[in-house]
Image (cartoon, rainbow, N blue to C red; front, side, top):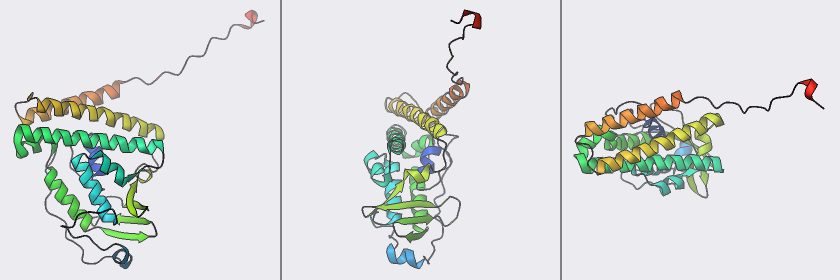
Length: 254
């Protein structure tokens, strides 16, 4: 279920949406913008104005593009900004894109069924989150060294975001998000994300079909199913080790 949305360009938001509690209103008050920026960042990548269309030719523009793609559930744009160097990383990008697409479908269904204010009870205040995310990206500190950019949020609440320049465009490598992650744990998380994506798609279809009389009912249904899925996962027995064939007693061996 949705939780309080944070940034790292909405990537944390995407994963935390499937993990926890009810949505909390996101703050619409943008952080104070810094008037100073490192000389290296100013020379290589000047700040984009809030009204300018984001572009991946700058690190901040790439983050804004990705945030917008995640918000809209645009799988193709997500793949354009994320960078997967191998099949395992490509699988991670696909899982993220699927979840984003499911969330966008749920929001669309909720707005149609309950109006924009009612939809906030189901998916949270995405407009406020979008405004906050853009403000935080605008006020972030960018340091560029060659084809590597490090974006540090002004409030310091999150780890810096590292981007790589590929063919003239800044992209976010999946290797940075999965750095140090245990492969088994990562596979388990991706499987859980796939299950939650399916759950959200089903809920979106039910909301669109008019199954719920109020956003509160839809919210409770989501919370209940997410809890049930979590309980099933916790109760699942560990896979037993394969049994070895019995060894006959020495007296029977030839």
